[in-house]
Image (tube, rainbow, N blue to C red; front, side, top):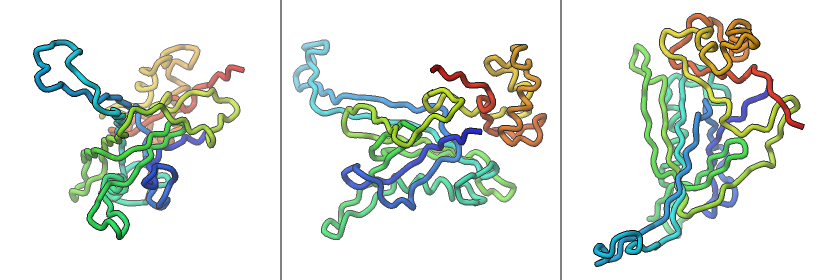
Length: 251
Protein backbone atom coordinates (compact mmCIF):
# COMPACT_ATOMS: atom_id res chain seq x y z
CA UNK A 1 0.00 0.00 0.00
CA UNK A 2 1.22 3.48 -0.84
CA UNK A 3 2.73 5.38 2.09
CA UNK A 4 0.81 8.60 2.70
CA UNK A 5 2.98 11.74 2.60
CA UNK A 6 2.72 13.73 5.83
CA UNK A 7 2.72 17.52 6.04
CA UNK A 8 5.71 18.98 7.86
CA UNK A 9 6.81 22.23 9.51
CA UNK A 10 10.45 23.21 8.95
CA UNK A 11 12.58 26.06 10.27
CA UNK A 12 14.37 28.18 7.65
CA UNK A 13 17.24 30.63 7.83
CA UNK A 14 16.53 34.37 7.99
CA UNK A 15 16.64 34.63 4.18
CA UNK A 16 14.06 31.84 3.74
CA UNK A 17 16.63 30.04 1.59
CA UNK A 18 17.39 26.74 3.31
CA UNK A 19 16.33 24.58 6.24
CA UNK A 20 18.11 24.90 9.59
CA UNK A 21 17.76 23.16 12.97
CA UNK A 22 16.47 19.99 11.32
CA UNK A 23 15.84 18.42 14.73
CA UNK A 24 13.00 20.95 15.18
CA UNK A 25 11.18 19.81 12.03
CA UNK A 26 7.75 18.46 12.97
CA UNK A 27 5.52 16.15 10.95
CA UNK A 28 1.78 16.26 11.53
CA UNK A 29 -0.09 13.28 12.98
CA UNK A 30 -3.07 13.71 10.63
CA UNK A 31 -2.92 15.57 7.34
CA UNK A 32 -5.30 18.57 7.17
CA UNK A 33 -8.56 18.34 5.24
CA UNK A 34 -8.08 21.73 3.59
CA UNK A 35 -5.50 24.48 3.11
CA UNK A 36 -6.77 28.07 2.92
CA UNK A 37 -4.60 30.64 1.12
CA UNK A 38 -5.67 34.31 1.24
CA UNK A 39 -4.18 37.23 -0.70
CA UNK A 40 -4.57 40.88 0.32
CA UNK A 41 -3.32 44.21 -1.01
CA UNK A 42 -2.54 47.15 1.27
CA UNK A 43 -5.12 49.83 0.53
CA UNK A 44 -5.32 53.19 2.30
CA UNK A 45 -8.04 55.84 2.33
CA UNK A 46 -6.35 59.22 1.73
CA UNK A 47 -7.02 62.01 4.22
CA UNK A 48 -9.84 64.19 3.04
CA UNK A 49 -10.75 61.68 0.36
CA UNK A 50 -13.90 60.45 2.01
CA UNK A 51 -16.12 62.71 -0.10
CA UNK A 52 -14.72 61.48 -3.41
CA UNK A 53 -16.59 58.19 -3.17
CA UNK A 54 -15.90 54.87 -4.83
CA UNK A 55 -12.56 53.24 -5.37
CA UNK A 56 -10.97 56.44 -6.74
CA UNK A 57 -10.33 57.61 -3.18
CA UNK A 58 -8.34 54.50 -2.31
CA UNK A 59 -4.60 54.20 -2.84
CA UNK A 60 -2.40 51.13 -3.10
CA UNK A 61 0.36 51.68 -0.51
CA UNK A 62 2.21 48.38 -0.15
CA UNK A 63 3.22 45.05 -1.56
CA UNK A 64 0.34 43.20 0.10
CA UNK A 65 0.46 39.88 1.95
CA UNK A 66 -0.31 36.20 1.56
CA UNK A 67 -1.68 34.04 4.39
CA UNK A 68 -1.97 30.30 4.82
CA UNK A 69 -4.47 28.99 7.36
CA UNK A 70 -4.36 25.32 8.30
CA UNK A 71 -5.91 23.24 11.08
CA UNK A 72 -3.96 20.31 12.52
CA UNK A 73 -5.17 17.52 14.80
CA UNK A 74 -3.21 15.59 17.41
CA UNK A 75 -4.53 12.63 19.42
CA UNK A 76 -2.35 10.51 21.72
CA UNK A 77 -5.02 7.77 21.84
CA UNK A 78 -4.34 7.07 18.14
CA UNK A 79 -1.31 5.72 16.30
CA UNK A 80 1.50 8.29 16.65
CA UNK A 81 3.67 7.07 13.77
CA UNK A 82 6.94 9.03 13.67
CA UNK A 83 5.90 11.31 16.56
CA UNK A 84 7.22 10.81 20.11
CA UNK A 85 5.35 8.31 22.28
CA UNK A 86 3.69 10.58 24.86
CA UNK A 87 0.58 10.50 27.07
CA UNK A 88 -0.10 14.27 27.13
CA UNK A 89 -1.08 15.79 23.79
CA UNK A 90 0.58 19.08 24.72
CA UNK A 91 3.93 17.34 24.32
CA UNK A 92 3.07 17.15 20.62
CA UNK A 93 1.53 20.60 20.20
CA UNK A 94 4.48 22.31 21.88
CA UNK A 95 6.57 21.16 18.91
CA UNK A 96 4.23 23.22 16.71
CA UNK A 97 4.27 26.17 19.13
CA UNK A 98 8.06 26.33 18.66
CA UNK A 99 7.44 27.98 15.29
CA UNK A 100 5.61 30.97 16.81
CA UNK A 101 8.03 31.47 19.72
CA UNK A 102 10.27 34.55 19.17
CA UNK A 103 13.99 33.86 19.10
CA UNK A 104 16.89 36.20 19.83
CA UNK A 105 19.04 37.45 16.98
CA UNK A 106 22.83 36.92 16.95
CA UNK A 107 24.87 38.52 19.78
CA UNK A 108 25.26 41.78 17.86
CA UNK A 109 21.48 42.29 18.15
CA UNK A 110 20.64 40.86 21.59
CA UNK A 111 17.43 42.85 22.06
CA UNK A 112 15.75 41.88 18.82
CA UNK A 113 13.38 38.90 18.99
CA UNK A 114 11.51 37.48 16.00
CA UNK A 115 9.68 34.19 15.34
CA UNK A 116 11.60 31.70 13.20
CA UNK A 117 11.13 31.62 9.45
CA UNK A 118 8.82 28.68 8.79
CA UNK A 119 8.07 26.40 5.86
CA UNK A 120 4.87 24.36 5.62
CA UNK A 121 5.57 21.48 3.24
CA UNK A 122 3.11 18.84 2.10
CA UNK A 123 3.92 16.89 -1.02
CA UNK A 124 4.22 19.49 -3.79
CA UNK A 125 2.63 22.28 -1.70
CA UNK A 126 5.18 24.63 -0.15
CA UNK A 127 4.52 27.85 1.79
CA UNK A 128 7.21 29.95 3.50
CA UNK A 129 6.48 32.70 6.00
CA UNK A 130 6.22 33.72 9.66
CA UNK A 131 3.69 32.11 12.01
CA UNK A 132 1.37 35.00 12.81
CA UNK A 133 -1.14 33.15 14.96
CA UNK A 134 -1.68 29.84 16.73
CA UNK A 135 -4.92 28.76 18.39
CA UNK A 136 -4.96 25.49 20.34
CA UNK A 137 -8.15 23.74 21.48
CA UNK A 138 -7.99 20.82 23.93
CA UNK A 139 -10.97 18.52 23.37
CA UNK A 140 -10.54 15.18 25.17
CA UNK A 141 -9.26 14.47 28.68
CA UNK A 142 -8.33 11.37 30.63
CA UNK A 143 -9.86 10.50 34.00
CA UNK A 144 -6.87 12.22 35.60
CA UNK A 145 -7.52 15.42 33.66
CA UNK A 146 -4.69 14.87 31.20
CA UNK A 147 -5.39 16.37 27.72
CA UNK A 148 -5.41 13.65 25.06
CA UNK A 149 -6.66 15.36 21.88
CA UNK A 150 -6.08 18.85 20.50
CA UNK A 151 -6.63 20.90 17.38
CA UNK A 152 -4.16 23.59 16.38
CA UNK A 153 -5.05 26.34 13.91
CA UNK A 154 -1.99 27.97 12.35
CA UNK A 155 -1.80 31.19 10.36
CA UNK A 156 1.43 31.66 8.40
CA UNK A 157 2.02 35.02 6.69
CA UNK A 158 4.24 36.29 3.88
CA UNK A 159 4.65 40.06 3.56
CA UNK A 160 4.09 39.99 -0.18
CA UNK A 161 1.76 38.67 -2.84
CA UNK A 162 3.65 35.63 -4.04
CA UNK A 163 3.25 32.98 -6.68
CA UNK A 164 2.79 29.38 -5.62
CA UNK A 165 5.92 27.33 -4.95
CA UNK A 166 5.86 23.76 -6.21
CA UNK A 167 8.18 21.21 -4.63
CA UNK A 168 8.17 18.44 -7.25
CA UNK A 169 11.72 17.16 -6.92
CA UNK A 170 11.07 14.51 -4.27
CA UNK A 171 7.50 13.61 -5.17
CA UNK A 172 7.02 10.61 -7.46
CA UNK A 173 3.86 8.84 -8.55
CA UNK A 174 4.10 5.08 -7.91
CA UNK A 175 2.72 2.61 -10.45
CA UNK A 176 -1.04 2.11 -10.16
CA UNK A 177 -1.81 5.58 -8.81
CA UNK A 178 -3.01 8.67 -10.63
CA UNK A 179 -1.34 12.07 -10.30
CA UNK A 180 -3.83 13.65 -7.94
CA UNK A 181 -2.92 16.65 -5.78
CA UNK A 182 -2.53 16.32 -2.02
CA UNK A 183 -5.81 16.58 -0.12
CA UNK A 184 -8.01 14.59 -2.50
CA UNK A 185 -8.16 11.70 -0.02
CA UNK A 186 -9.24 13.41 3.24
CA UNK A 187 -9.60 11.45 6.46
CA UNK A 188 -13.10 11.45 7.94
CA UNK A 189 -13.65 11.61 11.73
CA UNK A 190 -16.11 9.04 13.09
CA UNK A 191 -19.20 10.50 14.84
CA UNK A 192 -20.13 9.15 18.27
CA UNK A 193 -22.04 5.87 18.07
CA UNK A 194 -21.19 5.23 14.42
CA UNK A 195 -19.99 2.04 12.75
CA UNK A 196 -17.77 1.58 9.73
CA UNK A 197 -20.38 -0.14 7.53
CA UNK A 198 -22.84 2.77 7.71
CA UNK A 199 -20.07 5.35 7.26
CA UNK A 200 -18.72 3.48 4.24
CA UNK A 201 -22.19 3.30 2.67
CA UNK A 202 -22.58 7.07 3.15
CA UNK A 203 -19.44 7.81 1.14
CA UNK A 204 -19.77 8.75 -2.56
CA UNK A 205 -20.27 5.45 -4.41
CA UNK A 206 -20.61 3.56 -1.14
CA UNK A 207 -24.09 2.34 -1.99
CA UNK A 208 -23.22 1.34 -5.55
CA UNK A 209 -23.76 -2.37 -6.12
CA UNK A 210 -20.66 -2.48 -8.29
CA UNK A 211 -18.52 -1.49 -5.30
CA UNK A 212 -19.97 -4.12 -3.00
CA UNK A 213 -22.86 -2.03 -1.68
CA UNK A 214 -20.95 -1.20 1.48
CA UNK A 215 -20.18 -4.91 2.16
CA UNK A 216 -16.77 -6.03 1.04
CA UNK A 217 -15.78 -2.38 0.66
CA UNK A 218 -16.06 -1.51 4.35
CA UNK A 219 -14.10 -4.61 5.30
CA UNK A 220 -11.26 -3.50 3.02
CA UNK A 221 -11.37 -0.03 4.55
CA UNK A 222 -11.17 -1.57 8.03
CA UNK A 223 -8.12 -3.62 7.05
CA UNK A 224 -6.37 -0.65 5.41
CA UNK A 225 -6.94 1.60 8.44
CA UNK A 226 -6.09 -1.03 11.07
CA UNK A 227 -9.57 -0.93 12.62
CA UNK A 228 -10.07 -3.90 14.96
CA UNK A 229 -13.76 -3.33 15.77
CA UNK A 230 -15.61 -1.86 12.73
CA UNK A 231 -18.95 -2.05 14.55
CA UNK A 232 -17.84 0.21 17.37
CA UNK A 233 -15.67 3.11 16.29
CA UNK A 234 -13.95 5.49 18.67
CA UNK A 235 -15.55 8.97 18.47
CA UNK A 236 -13.29 11.24 16.44
CA UNK A 237 -11.28 8.35 14.98
CA UNK A 238 -9.95 9.38 11.55
CA UNK A 239 -10.68 7.03 8.63
CA UNK A 240 -9.30 7.15 5.09
CA UNK A 241 -12.06 5.82 2.83
CA UNK A 242 -9.94 6.36 -0.28
CA UNK A 243 -7.19 3.97 0.84
CA UNK A 244 -8.55 0.93 -0.99
CA UNK A 245 -10.47 2.44 -3.88
CA UNK A 246 -9.01 1.68 -7.32
CA UNK A 247 -7.04 4.44 -9.03
CA UNK A 248 -7.19 5.06 -12.77
CA UNK A 249 -3.95 6.11 -14.46
CA UNK A 250 -4.43 8.19 -17.60
CA UNK A 251 -1.59 7.31 -19.96
